[in-house]
Length: 300
Image: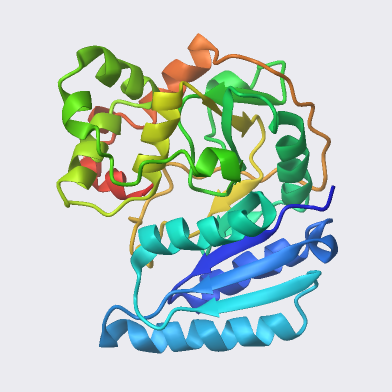
């Protein structure tokens, strides 16, 4: 099977986006993969210079990308990250049926595309798997963990992959929210991914944030499905330096990329209690001190 297309969403940070694209170019499967770059437009005059710089950089990158093909889509108006991802990912999934998505502030290991494609192949027909994450938290419980992957009921937006038949399930309007918010059992189930989940969904529904990811995770919970995470991270976020729209300055979730190229054994596992306790704690506002609710912006 051909490798899944790689889709990169960029906005107004040329330096970050250049690093992201150069890392992807170094991947083993880059020359066999189609690359799509979605460039959002400026939301105001202040952002225009950065947007123009990104578009010029992308055009230059496309001339010698190292990928099988490059398609650049430049929005005529500002869409915002949520609409850009929902629309762009949907378009590419309609054509290919599977997708690997990266935003413009992520570095990836040289085996990132290999890991993602192998996972897409292995779990494609597994009705319990919603998506694949390339990122993982630096969890202490993983140090002695005997497997290469683990499962969580919460997806991750920092380098991810999925299939069209999962993506098409999402009710982006969250039309059953009023029913959900009155059901304590459903709330408890949703919050198994983290104590912030219901609060984020409520903020989304009431227009206080604009997140594709919390709606994506809500549908995952409704389907009672899981996301596959690697024990060793294939993704590192370099955007938590106050330079982006959806990030704050901190190294709380910093991780170390796996070095070189490494094999990964995929298995059909269930979430492990010890790992999930530590995983959920990474989203616990009470442990974040003065940062607190600003971390809402990390994974939206």
